[in-house]
Image (cartoon, rainbow, N blue to C red; front, side, top):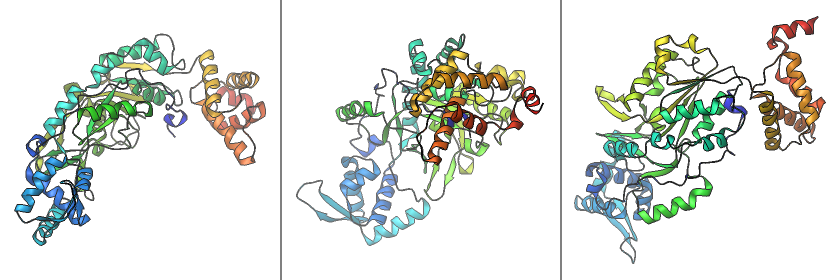
Length: 456
């Protein structure tokens, strides 16, 4: 279990300007304005018709994310080439269904064998580069005020100089290394920093490079505007009549851990989907990339840092396609590293200098730990008891366990587990606390001095 499992950031406040709209491109009114080759759009339409049969114009618009004007321009060409025909026509000009001809079905079958991708029409790599540059995260990060930082981080990590150090790291746009013991809250702190990236961004469903399609949008990672901002976003989109090949999202905060390997930093061929999947650091563009559990990846920490730092500094990463073709992909994200290992064990002095800021995240102070425990009681909906908290502080002192940020929620979750098994309501008492405490810690992981005292 990583530290991120111990906390929730759902209730964290968003910056006041979270409704800021990116400069979305206008809706293309012709094929030329899409920047796409006609053959690519022909193939997308033909493949969709092949698997759907008779297809209404509105379905084509929804699935391919192209305007009716663009679709009719291409379908008229397909009708002229005897690839498609009108299957049914209603009273209005747009109330029409199309189907493939016999020749069109043969060609569509060949298209599917070569590339199985059926989905939103891509944007060009040039258009994507321009959009990433216009909505760069660094311009937003430099607007982070100390009040915003204090509101998001709260008091849990507000040690001496902590807010200033983290704020300066964000403002600089340089990489940030969080290090400290397991359970100190490094992962949570990193995710909370992601809450500070203001505004919304436009993310394309896919990108086309030559004949290859790279799928970039991921609904699990590119989250929609928060509920309180949906109406603002919808009104802005309606006013602007925008290119629907782009999705309006919160700035992405992509979190990867020990599962990261060298292959995950390259384009991955999706045989079933007929396209390439963009790597995590590309999907994190205009947002934040968090690499957790640094030092536990199958890719060594020095190799990982070397692989990322130079492209990050240039703002461009080179990714390979079959045949040795290299493409220049934008790399615009805040890079946050988190490790439970000593930085000197991971990197030599030269590599450490390449990391912009190093922030130690250690045990909390007495007051901060008590405040965090009260907060977690509210979130868990367990009635708080000051005397039980005092007993918890005594347990920490007696066993020499540091006041780590992960403990309050973990203890309360175990109290709820025991109560649920017993069919009773979770209640904070000395008995339930000690039961949770004993289930959390094994005698073999006790500090040596405390274990010797217990044995004696």
